[in-house]
Image 1 (cartoon, one colour):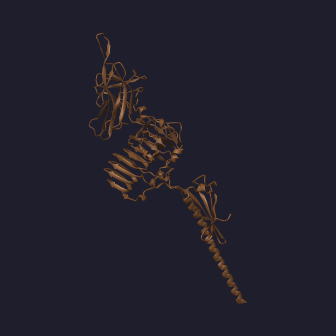
Image 2 (tube, one colour; image 1 turned 60 degrees about the vertical axis):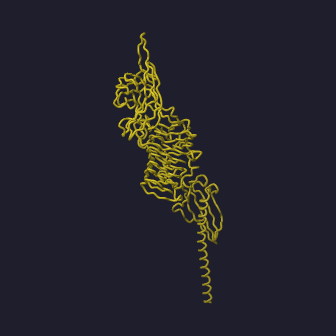
Image 3 (spheres, one colour; image 1 turned 180 degrees about the vertical axis):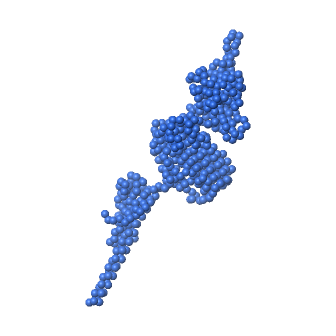
Length: 580
């Protein structure tokens, strides 16, 4: 009996041990099956970009077979229970694994995240070629392109491209395969958010150059001093004359009176060194009046005609004498009446740094005193212009509609758009720009209203037309020089706040991301404090583009500039779950 009892005890123990091993194996397998359910859920989220709308909250599958057992997956939105209403809401994946008699539950919270496009890690990223000739491309960051060629140019930065040729590279250059180039935006959809959520500016609300007048105190209604006047001086250097405001007028109540001219070249001149562009043609007009007459035998005063001339003077640091360009012919003005003198003059180029430039009116006879009124100076440039304007989330000089994020868009309808001497606090999307559209030759102060958002975006219905030029200079943007308050109420500046004066001076730069669907060209000496993306090419001849790389867009990627969602388990959220 004792031996039999011992045998039975051994058998019972063996059976209990076998059951424990089986239960342990089933428990472990059930745990694996629960984790499998979660992995299958993550795989479904990765493969189906519309998983939030294609699946409802709750069980995504029940008792799905595995190699050993089955599994069930339950997916919920812990914020509001609705998977479809917000792509950024987290989700909780509950996996239930079955094996034999064992049931195990595993739970994890998943946070969706869109990583920034890898092209945002580049200071300059180009889908096509960078072609330089007598240029300087400068950055302390990364330059990536399909190819880059440099002829008689200087390239500063770390260069990565499938083909690199020419000279001179002042940083590391690495030839890489196309697969190693960064991911560029999806140019067909990257601008959708800004067009949908921005305020539209009607291209017809922008002025043309034919309505512009760059002349200051053009109607002489403000006082005219004979010395130290920023608006009217006597030119050329070395000549003298007395100029003052007089109540004899062509229109309004005053004109500028010119007397006691030291020579025939002496005359009233307006400085234009703040905005003159070498090689740019300007239309200039003014009205003159003189009292030249002679007395005939009947003692009747007979008006005499005198010749008048308009000239543009420019002088650079490398010029021994000023460069002078004048109307193609002098204009005859009959005495005792107002006569309009006008024409186009191309500003002469100068050597070195510009020292001064001015437009001068004169009579070719030094003994003639005269009056001048209603002066016009403007470029002969075509197209629509944003010039000496302030655009911000609460200020729109071209319409009543504003945007709290400072997002604006303009369909140029193939009209040329010129942006110059303005302060933009916002994001501007330019659609269908005409040939020659650009940030023009002059200072600009531009930054987005939302950190990380783009400053300038350029798109077109036909991708090949989505081209833009960055031709800004490194001159400062001066409120006094432009007679414009660039930080009024509604457009505060980081440096000056907001005020009503015109004494502030701004560094010329575009801060933020520039993204152009096709080609970018550059001239002069433009500064971008951010990054530049071009879907096509970047080309230039005799210009300098400096990109001071800043990571705002990388750290806060704006809409359209992120990769597809990835799903990351939240730290410390993986846990075993208990039965409800």
